[in-house]
Image 1 (cartoon, rainbow, N blue to C red):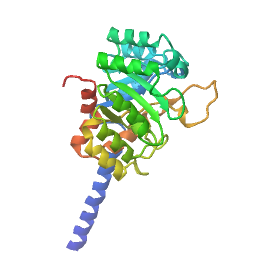
Image 2: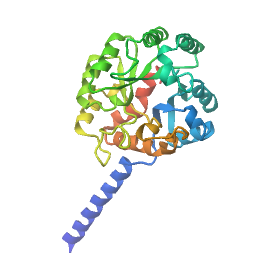
Image 3: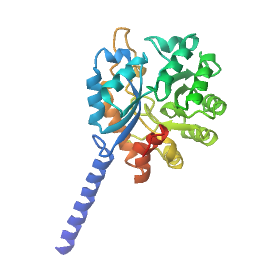
Image 4: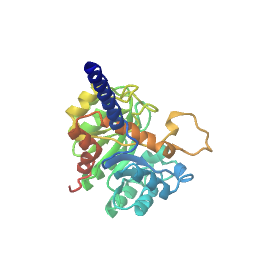
Length: 303
């Protein structure tokens, strides 16, 4: 009888442990302050969700620091004015609704960016998109001028590159070693080996994992949201240069008619929850770095 009771108690404690671990690994919201370093508030989102609603969504996840860009550029600044000093706008080169298509040939762009940085209202540049094999490329005159501005004003640049390997991005980070670069989405489709080569070669590169969720790029975790071993190795090795965010943009995943707005903010909570789940499987010190302290260091904020 005594052995039976001991066995039942052992089983009960084991199951309770699994339950508590599950709660810790898959939280609805963060228990500790979170830094979301990849947000957008674009014209085709502003049509259906107000700045107040965006701010409310962010705050509910205990996000206390956020980096945001927008198309057009001014929307991020308007959001910051309503949110307060915990939100950090970065200057997007997409200064009008279709700016993503022509920023690299806009003869007035560099002056606009410099005026934005001079104002002190913007804390970086981006997001700047490249796709290997398509214009523009990293040799573009406007891009090189923007990187020179980033170096002069000592602000970081958020860069998105879609390519089959690490060579395209290496060409950028090795040519601009004095610019702090945030590599969006951990390279999208790139592997952990590609990323390790980039982080080893370019000490000026920081990495973020937005959009590596199961609904977009994927490839970061298994079905239970546990980090794949190759990614865990990279994250632990370079833990002081790893950040993450949600990137609530949704039209990249599906065909969308011209008259439909982007509904990425409808998915914000589940994107946040996904990132919390894999962060919580790491050692506590590294959790804190990725969730909070790295972002503050990235922006050169005081403790």
